[in-house]
Amino acid sequence: MPLPAEISVLSFNLWNHYVDCESRCKLFIILIKLLMPTIICLQEFTLTASVIIHPVLLSLGYVASEKMTNSKLKHFDTAIYVLAGNPGVATSTTVKIISDDIYVFDNTKMQRCIKMIKLLINNMYTLTVATSHFESVFSKIAEIKHVQYGQAYDLLTRIISNGVIFAADFNIGNEEDEKVFQNIFLKKKDNTNDNNTNRAHMQDTWIAAGSDTHHEITYNRYSNPYNSESKYHSRLDRILFMDTSKKLQCTSHLVIAGFQKPDGTKYAISDHYGILSKFQVLS
Image (cartoon, rainbow, N blue to C red; front, side, top):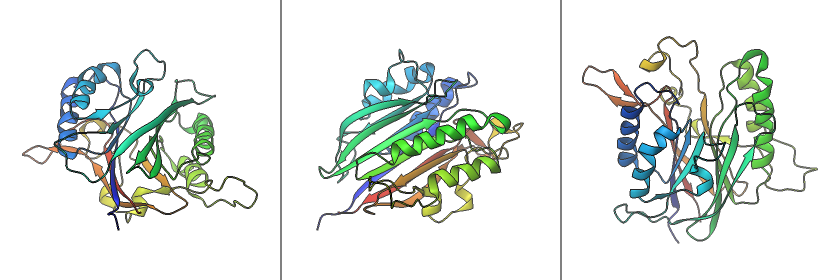
């Protein structure tokens, strides 16, 4: 019996701010070289950051379609990179890109969208990976973002694919955002009258991996030096997954904070912390 295919997904909002941009990008490159995740999902991926990061990712064996990285496109806030070949990385998992697409939210005021890429894993399992950066709105105008949650759910749960992984900055800033998010993405749905058998609830990798509170918060006002004056302390970023066949299993979930200085403080890569989730695809 063949061994399960192993996939790792790194999701990171790189912060579209000029502060320490070059040094933060270089730290991110060091992180990638250490982790070498199968898939990288980026949010707030600016043209300035891409000039530094993109060539290095290509040299490491990552590929991304033009739709994912073309700076001439209006929707250049997000990108997906796939490790499709690196002779220096030993792996039993092969990944091929089948197709990609972009869906623009019809109510966005900030050019927000979902980018999706369909992959073939070990020539037998189709996996759709998607990323997004939902509208950065809160409180009274948060409904714009909540509508986008619904559009994303409807789109991703109707995809004809074995599995779906959705890594995004959901901008969950308060209890109301959390309630709407859970009701749309995580609540079990009644599929009795739905002809599409893939349509189901999604799972959160943090919950699936055991809900370790040390690996919960991605926008941390206490430990991230860039957020010391922020009012938000939240799990803005999530990785969700779904597979009605249950072949896609989450094996771990880690929050990636950055690098630690000798005095115990951190060299942060962004105002957000990243998420690294690992999966197995059972044969």
